[in-house]
Amino acid sequence: MKVNGTHYRSLWWNTDLEALEIIDQRSLPYEFKTQSVNTMEEYAAAIVEMRVRGAPLIGATAAYAMALAMKLDPSDANIDKAWDYFHETRPTAINLRWALNRSKALLLPLSPDQRAAAALQLAHEIADEDVDINAAIGRNGMALIKEIAATKKPGEPVNVLTHCNAGWLATVDWGTATSPVYHAHNAGIAVHVWVDETRPRNQGALTSWELGSHGVPHTYIVDNAGGHLMQHGLVDLVIVGTDRTTNRGDVCNKIGTYLKALAAQDNNVPFYVALPSPTIDWTIADGVADIPIEERDAHETSHIQGTLPDGTLQSVKVTPDGTPSGNPAFDVTPNRLVTGLITERGICPASEQGLREMFPELASKAGGV
Picture 1 (cartoon, one colour):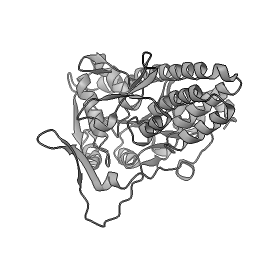
Picture 2 (picture 1 turned 90 degrees about the horizontal axis):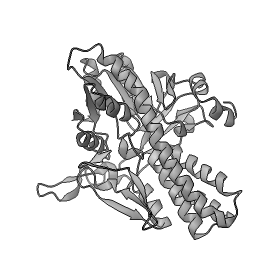
Picture 3 (picture 1 turned 45 degrees about the horizontal axis):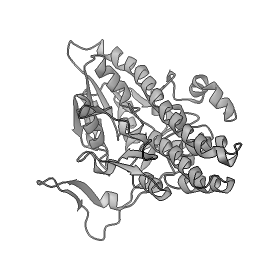
Picture 4 (picture 1 turned 90 degrees about the vertical axis):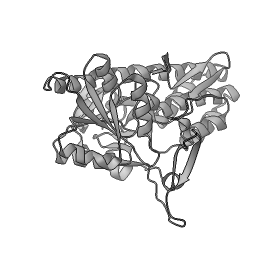
C-alpha cells in the first residue's frame, strides 16, 4: 500500500545490505520508521515485541529468519535449533509454525551448501504468495460489499465493522479483512469502515492510519460501541481476520472478536472472516479447547501509549497501583457464529465440509480431517 505516495510492503529484502527491512509498527500511527533486521536475536525480538505483527507477516518474517540461520550454520542440528527458537516467539498464530515447517521440509533433503540460498528463495516466495493470496481475498470479499451496495441509495456507503488490524500491516500487502474494503474503494464503491480501537494495544489505530493513507472513509470507535451500532442498523457487515482457524471453522482472532460475533448474530448482521489458507490448522477441530491463547505482558493493559501535545511519544499508567492485570491476547469464535470464510479461492461455510471442499488437497495432506 502507499505511504505518502510511495508504495511499501510491510517487509522487503534489501539486496545491498543482504538484510530484511521491516516497518517498526511499535511507532505507528505516530511515526513511520523502518529498520533492518540482521541477527537471530533481532528477528526474535521483532516478532515478540510486535515490531512485525499479524499471522501472515509473522510467517513471512520467520521464513527470512530461517534463511539467516542457514547462512550462519546450515547443519541439520541448526535447522532444528532455529525451528525451536522461533516457534517459541508467538504461540497462537499458526502461520509461524506453517512457515517454519515449510522451510524445514525444503531444507532437510538438501546438502548444507545449498541450504542458505534455498531458504532465502523460499522466503521470497512466501512473501510473494502472501500478496497474491490477500489480493484474491480482496476480490472475493468485494463481491459481498458490491451486493450490499446495490441495495443502497446513490452515494450511501456500505458500513463495514472490523476489529484489530487485519490490514496491510498485518500481512506483506493488501491485508486480509481490509483487502475487500480496499478493492471496493478502488472500484469506486462507496464504503465506510467502523474501526474498533482494539484494546489493549489500540491496534485499530493502525487500521485507521492505513485507511486514512489510502483515502478510505472511516470512523474510530471504542470496542464496546460495536453492538450499539449494530442495534441501530449502522453496520452492514463485519469482516475480521484470523490468526488460526480449526479444521471445522472455529476462528481464533484478537481478543474481543467473539463478542462482536455474538452482537452480530443477535442483530442479524453478517459476520465474515478473511481467511488465508496458511492460517488453517488442519490438526485441530475444537478451537476453544485446543488453540493455545497467548498471555501477554500485563504492562499492555495497565499502560496506554500516545503522544503529548508536543508530539512526544509517552506511555501512561491507567490502573491503580497494586492492581493485577490479565492480558489474554486472543479469543475463539465458534463456527456457528461465522457467516462465511472469505478465502483466496472463494467464500465457503465455516464448517469442516466447507473447508474440505474449498481446499481438498490441503485437507487430504493433513490426514483427511
